[in-house]
Length: 98
Image (cartoon, rainbow, N blue to C red; front, top):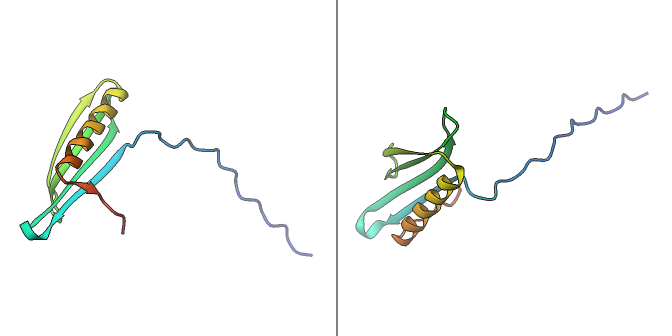
C-alpha cells in the first residue's frame, strides 16, 4: 500500500507593496564613455523612521552612498519618487534584469 503524499504547508497571502521600495537606474552612452548607475532603496532605521539610501557611480565600481532619514514613510516615498523623476529626466533608464 503506497504512503500518502504529505501536503505542502499553506503560506499566508502576502501583500505586495503599492509603492516601489527599491529602484536601480542606468545611463549608458558608449559615444561619450558614460557608464553610470543610480540605486535608491527605502530601509527602516533603528529609531522607527525610514532611511532613503542613494548609491551612484560608474558601473563596475562601489560608487558613493548617502543616507537621508525621514520620520514618516510617506515623506520617504515622496523623496524616492522625486529622485526617480529627476534621474529619468537626465537620461537614466530602469535597469533591465539579466
